[in-house]
Image (cartoon, rainbow, N blue to C red; front, side):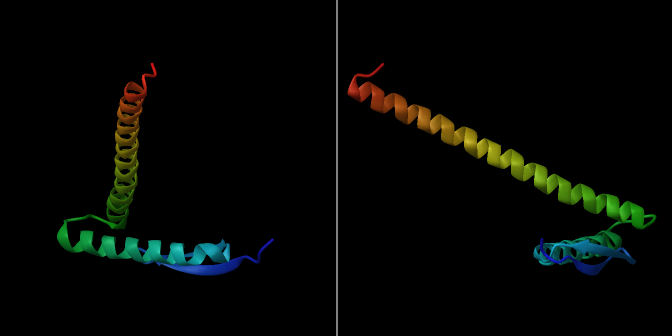
Length: 98
């Protein structure tokens, strides 16, 4: 079992101590940085009452990106399946297979 790493991440003026696998550190630090940047953008561009509103907007933004990627991937898979079915039908018709 790998050694755990203790890190502290700052998000919305709060420090969060975490105990993680060392392989997670880079991703967590990048995620915290992205949240901070997006929160700052929302605070500058929109009238927000408090940090909770900003964090909710950040969560919605990131979650919607994940959901949209899933939708886009699913559409790509469906398109590939349709093309493969068409190709299979074409090959089968040329070979006289039903």
